[in-house]
Length: 370
Image (cartoon, rainbow, N blue to C red; front, side, top):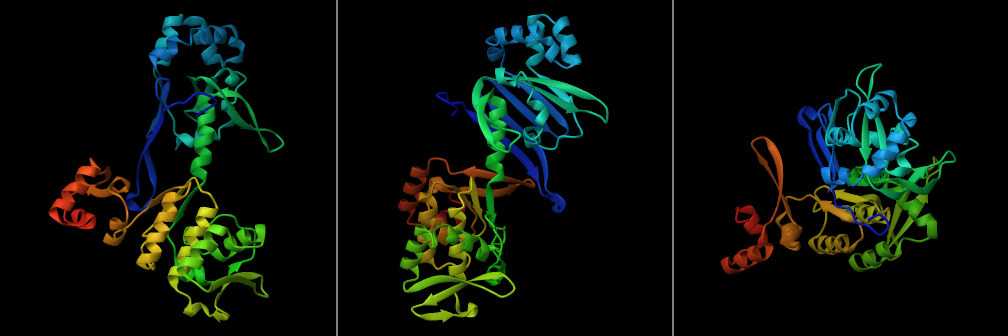
């Protein structure tokens, strides 16, 4: 949603981890009815909707009058092509590039902020060799978007929808938080520094949670409430060592528990709840069931579902499967050497079928009934 208008946007990606190396094979960003941008291997394609281009005749005419603002290759084309020929050209533009490995690289390419972008026009230079550039012309509606200024702040100005969307998507992807927690690492004291983001293994939890605590000189209400229910008479404190490391101090009644006596599940619960406090755009938790009592797990799943954060959890546990609704489940399968994701079609019918068969949701999943 930009202003009073809503745009339907779809982003698709295909990637591989074969050989232990992460590679993006294909990315496609589509703004329905306006344009699509696709990067497959080294081939970058921009395609505009013909109906949208037909509505942009006046924009193209204004662009032709300001041809001096265009790079020479585009300037010559504007002089040579008729309006109809230009529309035909913009329906699909393709270049081969060795230097762009992701669509989001484009968002960091400051050259797209051409003097015309406030009119919804982006001129994207694409390096095709060490000394050669090809230029893609990208048209989209004008919206109010954020741009960075020289004094390191962002202001709202008229920009192309394409530019604003890339900025927002880049920010979204930069705030994805992935947790594959290592409890042994979490138990170790963390260096005392201003950390505001959890590491993948949670090894800096002590420092992150301590910084959260310092903001209001207390544990956040959400964490305190859940702890009081699941671990009654348990309190949390912090201690800083002489070599400037911080670690959690857990008290049960008035007794301080040494680390070996603290439940792994408590550390894991604190890590996940702390992650929610950081307000990531997307939180991904690997094997959420490990170290957690079913009662704790059920309450945590409810908290994740009711939070404002989009959350993806992975599991191999029938217990977790039985705690969620069929419509919230995505099944991952390997088919012909490729990993495929699928949702459950007609979840209400599936629930009815399982009830009539007298089997649980997880049994239906384990034995291929869903």
